Structures are given as structure tokens and as C-alpha cells.
Length: 186
Image (cartoon, rainbow, N blue to C red; front, side, top):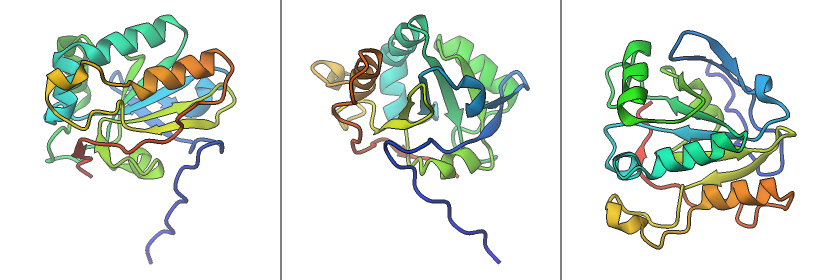
């Protein structure tokens, strides 16, 4: 008998709880970051849409700015073993270093449990959780559904805007957008 499907994540409701092991072998849970704003970023280094944001330095710049502001940034790899983007812990640490990623941690989700709990469909697929644990943003990183780095010029970065709204104590002006990119390789 199949397990019942989890309810899709809902803006304004508690973000789905999870525990996943990070690339250094430490179990990390969403609950450990209660009281902090958290960004969840689904990634797959083989995806041209992810490459657009990492090879340009766009993702790392956003990570550095957010982390410097006290935000916890968790990069999740939900690719299954044998699928594009799958990483062992050693490979994930090496990728983070080579890419110059500034996320708080890289979480390994090879069974796709966290990804499915969040209904993560694409890489990148982005989520913002506020200090109370409520989901306040989910969708694409920006409004340019393109793998071309030139599309970054003039793009509206939804994650940066959501983080600015949260920091200012405002409701997130655009809490949902269409995610774009490569499919998560469950």
C-alpha cells in the first residue's frame, strides 16, 4: 500500500518539517533554525539553468548577501543515485568549494523525501521560510525563464525581493512564482 501523499506546501502555513544529512555528515533539521529566516535552494550542477546562476556568480552573490544578513541558506540535492546531479557527501563538499557556494550547508536528499515534501519540481526551485517557520515564498529564483546568463540583466530576483520584504517586516509582495529549470531527478 502506497503512503498517502503529503499535502503540498502552502504559503502562510508552517513549512514542511524535515531532517536531512549535510555534506559533512551532520543531521540538519528545519526545526534547528527556528527563529531565523531560511532559504531552501534545490540544485543540480548539470542543469543549464543552475549553471546560469552559478557560473555567473549570481547564486553565490545572493547566498553571501543573505548569509551576511543572518539568513540560513540550505542547498538541497534531491537527485537519486545514478541520476544527473547526484552527489556523495565528498562530491557535494568538493562541488560547494569549486563553485564558491556560500550556502550555510548542502543537504543530501538522495531518496527525494525533502524534495517531495516541498513539491520541488525544478533546479533551481526556491523557498523562503520566515522566523516563525511559515513558508513565505516558493517558486523561481527570478522572472527570466532562460538558461542564458544574459537573461540575468534586468531580471527581477524574487528571492532577493522576498528576503527584503521579510527583513522589513512586510508581507512578501510576490509569494509565489512559477519555478523554472530542469526537473528534479528523483
